[in-house]
Length: 125
Image 1 (cartoon, rainbow, N blue to C red):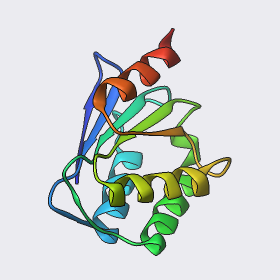
Image 2 (cartoon, rainbow, N blue to C red):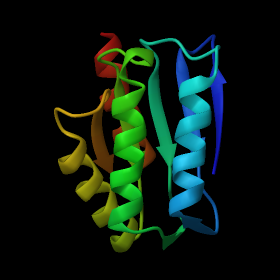
Image 3 (cartoon, one colour):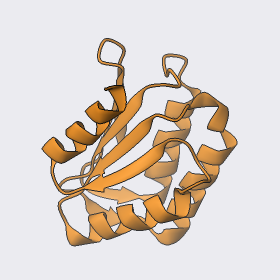
Image 4 (cartoon, rainbow, N blue to C red):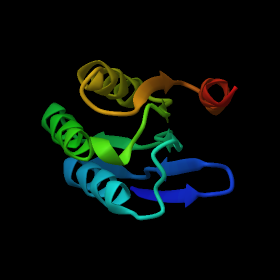
């Protein structure tokens, strides 16, 4: 997994490819949360289309823990996850439910990029 901070758009883009493991998820989120270019109000768009789910519920819990520990690095911005496979979408929903009220930002899980972007844009409106 990799991330890119687009200062001009005020958006963080995360992309996964191939088999995404627990450690890759945790490492990506940890690095992002330490990045000095990350602004608390930036929304996040995670493109998980086409990934192979090699992460587990334990990995999701570890990622949420990192997010809780670095909560001060985020505000109430939104984070959209786009997943086209049933496995990735299901893991995204589990993550959304477990992270609710525990880790910033607020999450939404989508099947297509257009819906995800519309939800993120509504935040700016």
